[in-house]
Each structure stands twice: as C-alpha cells, then as structure tokens.
Image 1 (cartoon, helix red, strand yellow):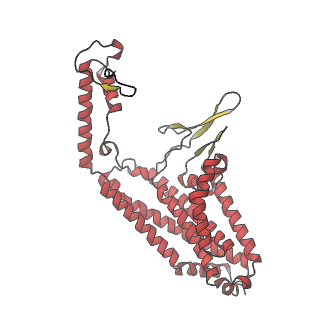
Image 2 (tube, rainbow, N blue to C red):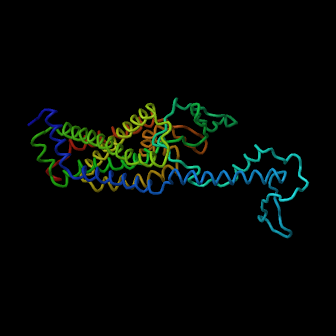
Image 3 (tube, rainbow, N blue to C red):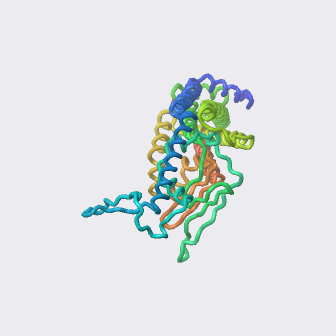
Length: 381
C-alpha cells in the first residue's frame, strides 16, 4: 500500500510531535538558556558600579603620570645588594636622580606607559555589548600565503576588513550566539537519533511498512520531517537565548551599534546555525538507522565529538580540518579557521566547511538508506 507524499509527511510530523524527546529537549534547552542568562545578569556589574571603577582607574592613572613626570623618567630596575637572579624589582624614583635624557617622558608618553601597566578592573574595562551576540563584518576577509623561505609556504595572513584586525594563525571574532549553537548541534543529533532509533526498539518499522512499503521513501521522508522540525526548534531556542540575555545588555551593558544592519546579520546567523543543527539531526537519524537503536549512535557520537575528533585534530591538523565538528563550527560561526601543519598552513573557509558537512550528511543518509532497503525486518523485530 502506498500513500501520497503529503500524507506521509503529515503522518511523520504527527509522529514526531507526539514524541516526548522533542518536547523535553525544547524545554531543557530553553530552561538552560534562561538560567544561564539569569546568572550572567546577576554577576554583571551595574552601570553605576562600572562608572565608579572607571573613575578609580582614571585617578590611579593620573597619580602614576604625576609620579613619573615628577621623577623625571621611567621606572628603573633596582637590584638589592647581594640579590640573586630573578629578584629585580621596578620602582619609581622619588627623588631627582641623574636621569638619562633619553628616558625623560612627556606627559602624553607617561600616560601611555601608565595605561599599559596599570591594572584595569573588570567593571571598568569590560562592558557587555549587545553587538557581541553576533559581530557583523562589512566585507569578507582576504587571505594571503606568505613566503616561508627556501620555496616553502609561510603562514597564512588573514586580513579582516577595515575596522577589523589582521591575524596570523589565529581565528577571527565570533559572536556569543555560537555558544548555544554548538549545544544545539549536539542536541539535534540526539533528537534525530531518537526519532529513528526508537521505532527499532518498539518494533514500529514493520507496522509502518504495511502502510508505506517503499522503504527509501519512508526513511527519507522521516529524515526530512525531523530535519525541518529541528530547524524550527533551533530558531525558537536561539530566539529564547537572545531574549533571555537582552536584559544583561540593556540594563547593565551597552546597545550601541545594534542597528538594522546588525539585526539582519543576527537573523542570518541564526538561520545558518539552525540549518546546520538540522543537518546534525539528519546525521543522527541516519546513524540510528545504521545501528538499529538510539543509545549506541548517541553514545558513539558523543565519544567522537568529545574525545576522538579532538585527539585526531591534535595529532594531525590536516585530518582535523576535514572532521565534522570542526567544520560545523566554522559554518555556524561564519569564521575562517586557520590550521597549522608540520610544514604548511591553510585556511578553511565557511563555504568549504559547508561542503564538508554536507558530504558527511549525504554519506550518512545514503548508507542508512542502502542498509534499510536490504535489511530483513523479520530477523530484527
């Protein structure tokens, strides 16, 4: 017996909605995000406290500048008689000793020196910025392989657009939204594995095939429905995260720069993250089909993400640049990642990382479909 695609998709959607795993995951993540935002709000300094710390910091800078200008030069190393290695201290002269003219400072130079060596209190220098949820770049970065000498490639210089920064062998700035994004990706794998693997445990696949006998069509429809549902859930949870953290920035932080262009970038980033999370659910469902249960794929993927992939990345960076979690993070963060090998350097762009993630999903789906079409259900029911 065969049914229409619409009826099959509607049936699979009702089946997914009726499962507790989706509801539990949604509530669990929402509660986690709200709780984390509450802790962040409680620990953040108020604007009044931050202004007081800033004023105290400025007074310390002014005192340091006055002392330097009055002393006539930079702090000089002083080693007590008979002191051993490592006991040299730095003091500011309190009298007017003979000072090398080269060490004499103007007031501007003294202020620059004092600002470099004076401790900045957390509240005085760290203001929660709303734009930290997702920094928006005005143009994509450019990459250039520098000359390493003797015909060998040197480090890759990634130049950020004007107003950004150039870095060598380091990653660019990413938004706070990437923190829940990684958790959502792992949650998507769990939800996808449960949506497929639970039917093996309860022997539902045999019954379902009496209604829709085309196995490939049935599996692909279920994976598509699960992916679409997880995508919608990821969008909702990201909205919860942003709304939960909003009081931290509005009440105790700064909203400067959060204009329409920034909001559009935030929405685009949320959509990209939700898409990758949905792909993760499809991979989880495919693994559950291959393993014929839920626990083994979830446990295996957790082991892979926490231990195997980091170990491989540390052992062989070239291998690490082709692994799933690394590339998923690059796509979600929309941030080129530089890799340093033994003799070469290279950058994995978000577009290249998206191709890698898509290949992982395609291989998993094709393998699951091939196995499901040939599996003897009577022997495993």
